[in-house]
Structure formats: C-alpha cells, structure tokens
View: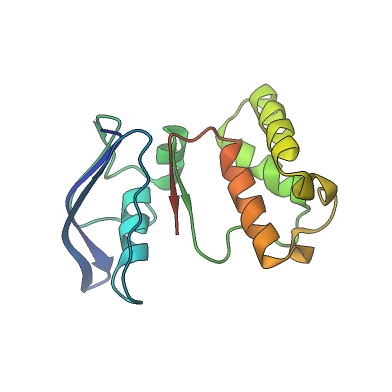
Length: 160
C-alpha cells in the first residue's frame, strides 16, 4: 500500500472538520475525493500532506507513519501536495519557480536534469521560462505548478 489513512481526525483551532477518515491508495492508483464545498476535501489533503497537524489517526506512507512530519520532510520522502490557488511565485520568472522547487532536492545535477525534463514535456512553459510567472494564464500557472512537482520525482501527488 502506497498510502494508508486510518481514523484521521483534523480541523482548524477548536473546530474538528474531519472525523475518523480512512482511505487507502495502492501504487499506480488514482483516487478522487468528491463532495460539496465545505465537506473537508481540502482538509483531508492538508492533513495528509502536513500543512495542518491532525489531532488523531495515522498516515502511513510507504510503510512509515508520517503523520507528525512536516510538508518538507514528507516532500523529501516523495509525498507532494499542490494546493488550490496560490501555488506559484508570481513575481519570479517561470525558470526561477522551477529552480525553487529543487531546493528540496539539494542536488544541483538532479535539479538541472529535472528542469530539462519538464521543459521538454511542457514546451509552452519552456517558451515562457524567462517571463514573470504572473503573466501566465490560469491553466499555464497550473502547468507550472505541476512542472515544479515533477522535478522532484514524487511517489504520490496530492492535487487540490
């Protein structure tokens, strides 16, 4: 099992939003969490990713309980979260956005190879690599956010 979420409880301050949520994800599977606004879909992802601290339950990623690890440590293990909305740095160039993603790698050779790979996969991003990211359309911004993640060779992407 790639990811096991067992009896996850989380919320914001005194308000509990998730009550004992459980789900599992095997290697190669795609899982979609659907529901109305306010149902807790984003909260599940934030709690699993480490953006918020769960108050109970377990998050097992590749056999290791990672519930109390922060987002950076989970990212190093291959569990990556792409938040909804503000997920790029608009005042930086497209290329600088890609380079920042590599700070998790701490390996300049892997970073350069990863950037080359995503620029080949996404020619539209390559064409705009020297332009400020704020000039990208909404779809292009999402493409840039995904490109930043692909540089890291994730095992699991949580996409909000």
